[in-house]
Amino acid sequence: MTFCAAPFVHMVHNPNGQFRTCCMYEKPFKGDYKNIQEAFESEENKIIRQRMLSGEKLPECAKCDIDEKHGGKRVTSYRQFFNQFKDYVNNPVFKTLEISVSNKCNFKCIDCDERFSNRYGPTIENELPEANFFNELVELKILGGEPFLDKRNYDLLKQVPKNIKLMLVTNCSIFPKQEMLDLLLEFKFLNINLSIDGIRDVAEYVRSGTKWSRFERNWNKWIEWGNKLGTNKCHMTPHFVIHSLNAPFFEETFKWSDIDLSWWSWDFLTGPEWLNISFLPDHLKKYILDENEILKEPIEAFLKTNKHDKNLFYQLVDNAIDTPPAMEDYIERFYARQ
Image (tube, rainbow, N blue to C red):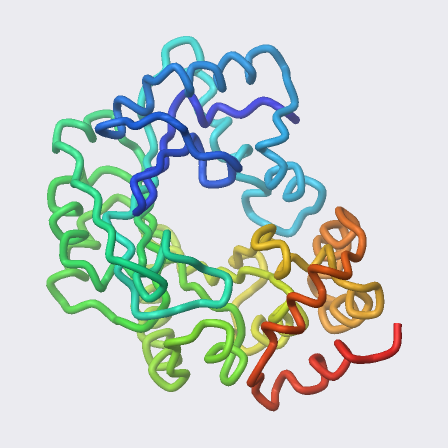
């Protein structure tokens, strides 16, 4: 599959002001657009639409190509999700939006940067769209930073039509107050995406700012809240970003969660490349596969996308400092004879 309807129905507005046709699309728009609608109707986006219609296999869509090489997810790829809107190809209409109103965050995750966390740099804020902008919207995805850390997300949710699907991505450091919970309940359907890249010491290491006891407490609150609502109203979706410092620990994280794999979401970090597991030496790739039997097929498919790169591995070694005891067996293998 090469065609994707995303450029015809969707837009991403990152906290640094960048626009993208999709979060999986590698390149942000180059133009300086004053709002989401202008970016959606831009010549840049029209060119992407024409490339899709011509049947071109876009290299910028490689992440979906990777996802579609394996199964296991309820929705195999974002491309699969967007293609439910193929009817709008001849008359593009804004139907879905991914937005970050700011990069305000209390974490400094090892795989993140200043675009999504002000722990790496200055605080960046986007202006909220006009209320009439949402007239045709059917699905909204809100990220941060950490969405519950920025009160403007409450303002955004107040002005959005409630007969839509809402997805919120949270790092589980904050469980919202009743006022926010009541507002969430007004929406047609909820998907609360719980970011978890490891448990206990591994979580605290790869997602600096995590306090595991607090994370676990808020995780349990979300699960209990979601169970009361039922799956017809709400999905709690654990999401794991697989990279070179946490890859061996997916399976133990999954088992800790006691949530069926079909409800999980995961993706493979492609950049920065020193954290991309496909560039690891073969003995570490084997170790990762041995530790993740339950996710062996997708991990193996991704590991084959690149060969070992010594310079990137040396960069990984230089950055793997002060690792916790839970990672000791894995880190020792960094220095094994190859």
